[in-house]
Length: 288
Image (tube, rainbow, N blue to C red):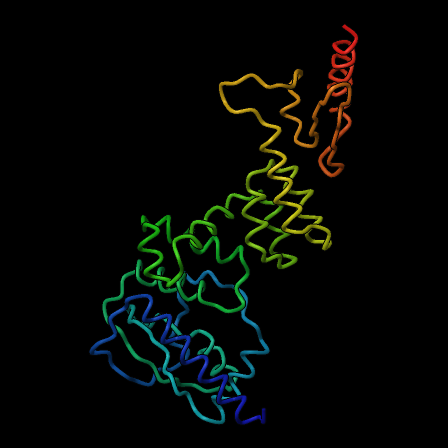
């Protein structure tokens, strides 16, 4: 692809994305005013959850604007003596890198703080490069605004199943969340299962995932084995000494044989005494 076509594609992509975000935010832009604004009079949306912008893509966008002009104006709303950006932060940043003093804008009147917040979150969710943790917490923020799954789905275009999964991922242990973000571990299937484990088990498994030593099949089997080891509520465990609480151990007895499966990633020395007592009990029972 030659340079001009690449720049055209970049600019068209920015335009399409902005249109998509605004449409999904349900913000009515009828009767808006088109004006040229000094860039120094435009404040960023204070509710923008996105803190990092890829400088390379900003530079590419700036080159396309330099060549073809700003095809899609930014959208702002009036606030006292200044304006607040509603949509188009990448375009605004790109224009600033070109040392331009003015930018074409569409002005929407009477935009509430709630609308500003929702638009920023929707725009964040629609990013192609968003990591799974930022996406999950953007959905959580929307849910904290008393929006139902149906409303969030209508607002973002995402399915209710996907939203529910993202909300679940928010409950991962804080240390695990940091590892997921730092290593860009965007596997929702595995992360959703990890939520069911203790913080200690989550940490061990996420480090295996980080090192490329954990598959979805393994973590799924780990969950299935855990279900087998835990007795239903209201029933007595077939294992004495609270063996059902030892997630690392799975035992089965057949005639005079005792099979013991130990997950070395979760097993610790504190379990040894409990298991020894259990083995002795089984041995004594077999003699009687």
